[in-house]
Length: 307
Length: 255
Image 1 (cartoon, rainbow over the protein chains, first blue to last red):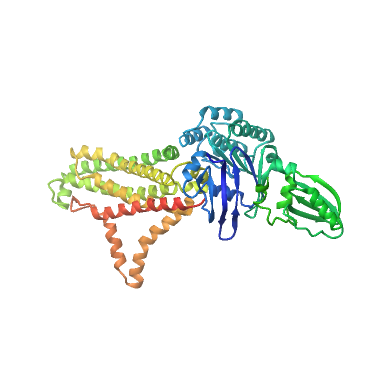
Image 2: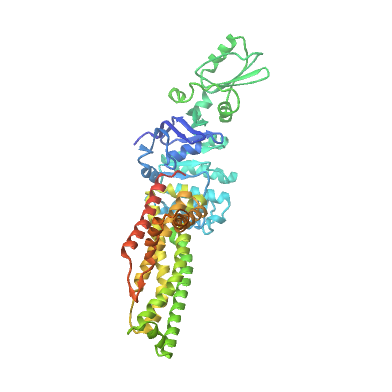
């Protein structure tokens, strides 16, 4: 039993016009809820598709549940529940028929769980999939993925189309029925507040590169925003500096650790340090993937080793 | 399970097509019955004049089956193309391919399951022509004559080629409409190009080869059944090549 459920080494996927995934080094621990964040087109969906064998990697290597993604696709699929970004299943089948279809592929399928989730999620089980609303389609996709007894759930935008009540319910189900059972959940999403609620690991990807991979707890405890004032931007190059943003006479530096030492260095350069404050996930995401000066060199991949 | 899904998707169409084929077969049988009565009225004079044959019922069998073959040709093209265009390749345009290909099984199973069911349905549909007509023919001739099984086999093999081609083009293009269009283009090219080569560039080798392959339809002549087994085997081999290509394509294709 490997302790790393998803592991990639320099994984890349190149399309004729774009380098969708570019040297990705992911490490998803067993039992974690891993939030995979990125802007549109950052490479999240391509990464997930590559892990599941839906696209072929251009370079690098990856293992899911200890299986090589190039050779052991079926073994991976037997143990992985997948909710796709499109939430599209067979239009002609009803959810009840989709359950019947899906059950045949998964020996660990649970009919009891399917009945429970159908009731809990209020899914109209006899309505053809084509006639379901986006929210109900999303719920059916979740039902199918959650009942197959998967060790790993790969979810691409899992709450798309769900109302806040259903979103909250789904997140609770994920934690109570799956994570607490030792399963791993890998969620790709734009919804920072949802991920902040349930994730214990965060990976931020931009333009195919992993900018940050760390525990959410580490962000809460160690990541700090250092705000200084001054006419010129202090020139600093520190391994713990993630990004810097400037507006008028104010400059904000996002650091991963040792914020007080960093502030001291700024003071040494004549800057006036106004504040050293904790940050939330949104600020970290904007700091890394937002359109401002980012100093990510050397940070990607280095942070997990330090936490 | 994919077989069950494909069966659910296609069973209504199969019933409709089969009934239509059965109706045409019955109409052909009724035609044979009417013809036999007319022949009896003329005391078989016409038939004996047309072809001195001690067994006029053999002609009734062959001519009736030949008439039915005209309708079977239409059914072969229609069923072959439409069933091929609604193969596993349609899941790309429906958006469900990612779901299908993340079910833990070999991709080739989807191809061959789908293809096998389609072939079985084509066989059932084309059999309906024979089932509709043969009871009437047996009734008028009081015996079982020229093998309608040969006609059925020929039609199934030709339908298999069209079906398999469209099955492949639908998977290759990821769209039913594009697959159907490409398949039709390939068929037209096969029919017209050798003629064009002969007419414009006076190269007749392709035309001869094409006409040789079309001899598969000349299964009865001189009042006898003479199937071209070699040509049928060639068509059957072509029909098997396309799902093999479909398999190779689907196994490599990205979603």
